Length: 97
Image (cartoon, rainbow, N blue to C red; front, top):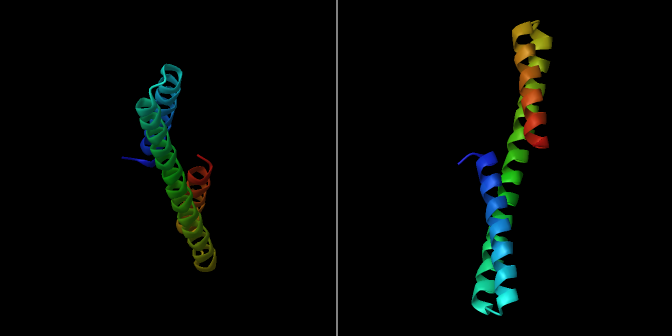
């Protein structure tokens, strides 16, 4: 699953688990409340992992872009410089999302 898909799935799992936990607590069903709390925690962990992966990938693309721009500048290769700008922008977006 993509990072965005993992983030969305984690968020959905977290919300569903929180609702299940609340219903369980309201009804006095400790088993349901515990199951909901576990589901919520799993969802939050899934979302956090996807966010960390996106940030790491974004950092890699940004660094790759900087290297391409520098090499393109040194060699006069404007095409490589343009690819570098593109990778830097891609990295910035991945780190923000």
